[in-house]
Length: 237
Image 1 (spheres, helix red, strand yellow):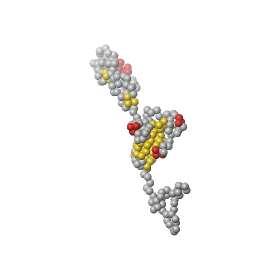
Image 2 (image 1 turned 45 degrees about the horizontal axis):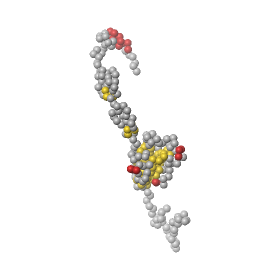
Image 3 (image 1 turned 90 degrees about the vertical axis):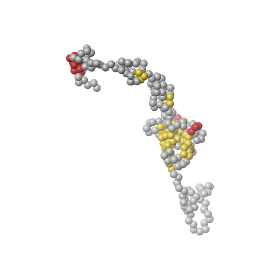
Image 4 (image 1 turned 180 degrees about the vertical axis):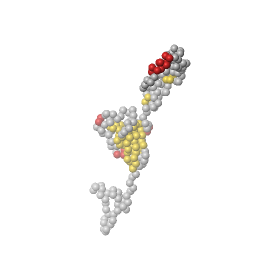
């Protein structure tokens, strides 16, 4: 086409009736068109837990990348279930390689689409500071923002020999303070241990040899029956 004239096509000298076959937007001369690209949906799942974002100043999480020339607001992510993992979809040509970063944007940066950027660490970056992937149907790109892991660690006490132990924690945060002391923790037991904070099933109880002796006088007699009848039918709920 002629770059100086709206890319209009060049035609050969026409000396007789001719039929020109081409494809719109292409240079074919036989009327054929190239097959359209196969597009796929790439899913993003970005864990923002413990990052401090989003917040009042940066209230949107987005993915910006090479597929649109690094324009802001490339893919807007959402967290409908409130679990801290933000998801969104990029429709892109199958097999296309792309780079991206994670960003938090909002009123503090004038909703530029950039704001605070979470880059890829060196060990998983495909280019300096950038994450990368190759598009494929069903691909889920999952990262803890700013890390190479798919999910963010859960802080807490990870030592089971402390009372503060949190079985959901994956990263110790120094909150283990109270060592576990096993023993009988029921004060009505014969072997109650005031120093224990975790029951070990060792409690022992003296059984009443005369369970009908309600008044404790060593006899099961009329006073015991009267005591029972005085509370008979009481609703304890």
